[in-house]
Length: 270
Image (cartoon, rainbow, N blue to C red):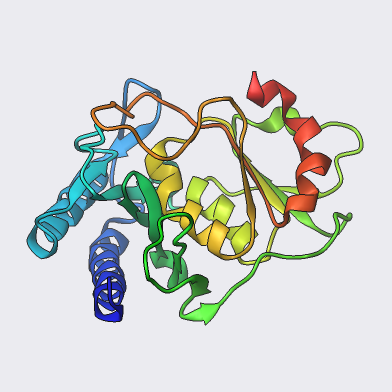
């Protein structure tokens, strides 16, 4: 793939998420949510954003597959596939808390190589390229509003942060080496590690659409991504339904911190 291809991917992802985000900002704090079978919330805004993103991808990249939270949750096995989270942080969105995101991840042969996550209330766009073992000729790096970002090289301390989800509070134990923050947006938890804001983050029950875009950006920024159970995250498997599959995940800013934080994750890994 040449430079023009990756430029078109980035331009499409940024333009489309910003267009969708403009409408979501109008709905923000003014919609009612219903509860899905897994206990999470969904609104008409989630459903509209999902459809808008799927239609845009089908128009611009008709040969690409799509896997989305509110649509088809089965990996189609196509060489290129977009994984969509149309509104990450629905509870924040419905309660008027200005922290939620739109996430896109582009997979090649089942593994993400590009991610774009837009946070409309903050006017922040994160994107990243990470070729990994794909042997694709492509850019690399992680960016916030087009400025390069890198995870922190610091050692843990009482003035550094670690981010949790609501289901991972078991990590709060005597001697935990950082201050705790809970943001309510899975992708943004991980992005704070990529940006050097936090030294680590854990999510106990994230789905693949919570992870695909952020995975690229964290890896490209120098962070370490750790699966907390034996099942590998990527590559996705053709024909597999990912709707009810969770991927407990620890992310830290550099590999040396894995043994520091991993012992606190034992209850999550069970």
